Image 1 (tube, rainbow, N blue to C red):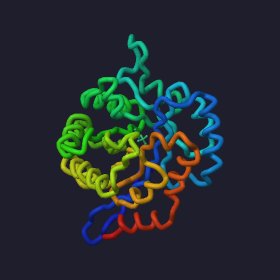
Image 2 (cartoon, rainbow, N blue to C red):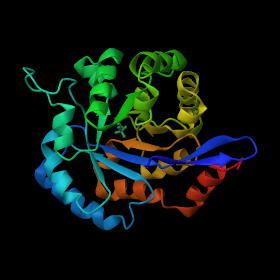
Image 3 (tube, rainbow, N blue to C red):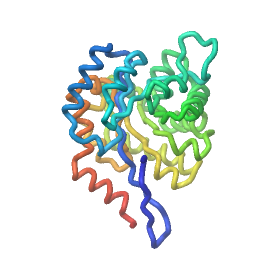
Amino acid sequence: MNSSLLVNKATNTQSAIRLPVIGANWKLHKDLAETESFFEKFRSLVDDFGYCEVVICPPFLDIATAVSAAEQTTIHIGAQNLYWENDGAFTGEVSGKMIKASGCSHVIVGHSERRRYFGETDETVLKKLVAALEAGLTPIVCIGESERKNVESVLEKQFRCGIAPLSAEQFAKLIIAYEPIWAIGAGKTATPAIAAAAHRLIRGHVTKRLGAQAANQVRIIYGGSVKPDNAQSLMAQEEIDGFLVGGASLDAVSFAALVNLCKSEEKSESRINQSCNYV
Ligand code: PGA
């Protein structure tokens, strides 16, 4: 379940408690042996995965190993990319149908590194989103500006061209990752206020396109140099529904610390209070 709805009886409006998502984007890191040892250690460091949706996205070749290492847990496995055709003469590509059959539940779409190094555009992002949804995968779609200027127009265009054409039903299955490119791998995290403002902007676009309920329910997660020592203040922002983590997800200890952060009662309670504030 992504989120639950609370109804304000006085105004008959709804508010969502959004289950946080903690995603690991391993990028081009880890072979089979490293994948196995990560899971062995990681599983022993988290005693309850129920406080958030944990999604680990290894390279394609590690997926089968990750899926079996995650058995009997609620850890989800995701891919980092997909192609929009199901099959055919597309050398080197992997389809949503194949990813789903390999045991994945999620897939990252439109990561800035794919846009920058592999020519992905808002148009191809949209095709990939549709293909992922048709395959029954939950897409984690990435948007974000490259420099700290034109933030509004970049996010508006990426949303309008890459995401907004989806139907309400398709949109409901999406997770959006706001990843300012200047913060990725740079050790330069957006401040909680900067990140929250960008999330609010994105949620505002969702409201305009699909209404308040869709905006209330969609998880918008932050990515860009998230580490255990900066995560708490980011997560304390009502707007931030979790993280997509690169570097810090490669180490079982730091990734477990991020997952365990969701367990903090103080945080869960304050989120619930924020979400319930007009019930
Ligand atoms: P980072 O990467 O945590 O290493 O900055 C995040 C991402 O690219 O998803």
